[in-house]
Image 1 (cartoon, rainbow, N blue to C red):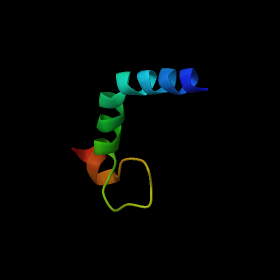
Image 2 (cartoon, rainbow, N blue to C red):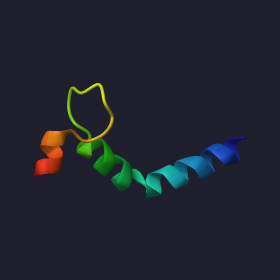
Image 3 (cartoon, one colour):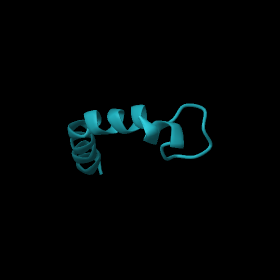
Image 4 (cartoon, rainbow, N blue to C red):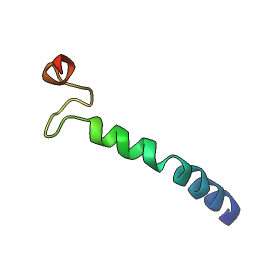
Length: 42
């Protein structure tokens, strides 16, 4: 069980930059997870 947890942490840490970029791209204070029309116009 510990080995599986360590493997998962290792996998996630290789993707941390992708995860942070995805979170930063989300609109703030919106109930929807996708980009807004305002963001698409830019």
